[in-house]
Image (cartoon, rainbow, N blue to C red):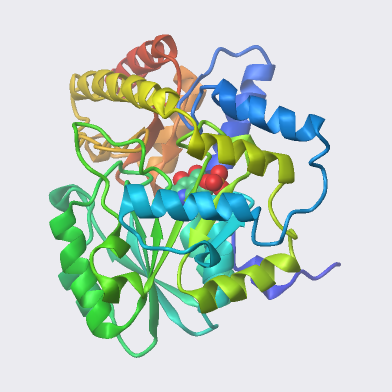
Length: 388
Ligand SMILES: Cc1ncc(COP(=O)(O)O)c(C=O)c1O
């Protein structure tokens, strides 16, 4: 028998990918599935970005770039972070990666030692604890629920921090809850982080998908001390409907970015070259396609929340960002796995059990799908819950 390394025995496959594969398999058997499991925009990447990548390919931009990314892209990302996020990063503080996921991987691998503790507010995106487990460090979960709008407080961070605490992973807008942290909430968190000198890994990948005229605030923008303790991770997947391009970035203190670049030089060697030219066009071109997509997501969110609230027994906070809703199903006395399995089997609606994110009383629905599918799937969910 082949023996696998301990490190992979510490992790499990992404449950969100598993559910969407199951939904795809059912569909290929001819079953009409309403798939609310996916975490990717249903739009095609805007034409100007696709054209720039095609031009790059046609003009022979097919060789490696520098490991840390095209210099002009690093400059442009630094300018974006300065101008839009009030984060005074310089180009040498930016690493271009193969997706936001690799930005997080490279950052955490560069920072965290086995035995360290990493604070993770929960419900949390599936990948955070797995990266920490892979490193042999310990994820320390800070539990949140509907009563605090799924947001962690400064008091929780204070209470959980000890000599082994090395980092906090802070995601806003949050996958899976859609929660968005306000400036005041971030300021309170920043004070605790600075007082203990821990690093904050800020995952801002959903920053452009924010509703109700709320403003995205980057925690690193709240003063020099917190800036020097922050690594900001972001990417092109969600804002530019570019999940398949595999492009993201990390920006942070030079020693961390240097270490992460060295790591990258021995793993992927860098992000795809012609995709990076597309990213350059994304940052220098018109923001209209992003604004348009954001508007469509907001209308869908309103539709989904209104429909969910008509279902007796379901309760749902209003998500102010990303493209997920996270209704509470505890009134149905089923754990989230059983609820989602039966919903898929009996009503052909694919959703993700909240347990994947550490919340067994909830399920996650993604509204990154067209309005017709949303209406049909919500009607099925309504009938399904009535049958329980
Ligand atoms: C919270 C969060 N961070 C990061 C990512 C990584 O996205 P990508 O690797 O496609 O850039 C995702 C994708 O689902 C996500 O939900």
